[in-house]
Image 1 (cartoon, rainbow, N blue to C red):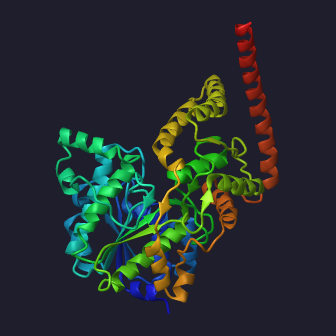
Image 2 (cartoon, helix red, strand yellow; image 1 turned 90 degrees about the vertical axis):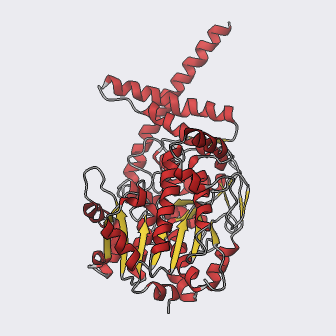
Image 3 (cartoon, rainbow, N blue to C red; image 1 turned 90 degrees about the horizontal axis):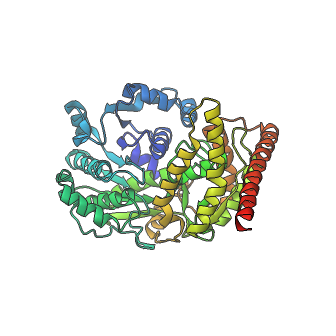
Length: 485
């Protein structure tokens, strides 16, 4: 018997962020393996599209095909409520709020803005204000058994050794939320936040501190995943639809757009497959309820890979290049290459030659064709993102993960099979052999059998780009020679 599936059977689970990258996998897994009574999804109206239509579009994703074969009527167990993470009380109507408080057994709070450079007030409103609303709904729910807050492994990334605990914070989250129109207070908050690499990690730390205060009201835990990437096994191998964080840079690299990185090649990076994160969230919801008497304190779970299955950036580069040779992109603009350096000057030089020079040429060609130039602007945006993650890409973090190990020990052998979340159980070579063709198939919508045609196309593109680069560099060197004569 599966203890986890048995716990969730006939339960009503409220999942915030259920239409996001992690949330989709959590929802699919709950519906497919847990026999939940109902999954409640909060969806806001978007671009004149009603929430019900967004759910239909969500369920049309390939990740729900396996579930649809098993249970064609699975959508009957999805309840949609209209709400907005940025609004007070999620802008829920009284009927929806009452339904949540009356029927919810488990809350998995995943929703957040994951933009690293988000404007401070908006980041606070969503990541802190949204968490408080979810916690308040939990506190007022009549049948709540478990609450899981999904944070980030880098919520305290000013420290290179990150423990499984909520770190103290020298400001009052409630006071900040109550005074978002106080310019002086916000300026003080911004000044204090400079201890963190970006607004995302800072506001996640604030939300963790607030979550800690609710531990006396109901069983609550925090799951901290590191960089979440494409799935390893479920619901389909290699699935990914996110362009944020590590996924965005990896996709840009595979496409041939990002050819240089401001990163130390020997730094240990930390990534986790999205299905392992999903399984950990679901398992923590189960364990938090059943061990509430033995564990009255809030437990934090660092869902990371580097402690037990370390991987350096250079090792990842080599594994990825092998996989990309087997699965080249037909639509890619250049073959995936990486010139990485932790030195600011060298990174800028690489960026000039490998990014901006070709971009100016391409933009000029687009102008001549009457099209809007966009490559230079794209690289400017990429450089802004690079600046927000520079701390992560040049620092080897050391994570404690004893609580994650204890979680796995508490699970039955059946649950080990149904909800794998131990990152020691796969090799990175195997992972990228799955992730790369998965991106090709699900993100770029390419046929996996077009390898020969893709290789021929890539050789032509390389020849054109290399010829232009050599001509430009040659002309620059010739000009320099005549200037120095």
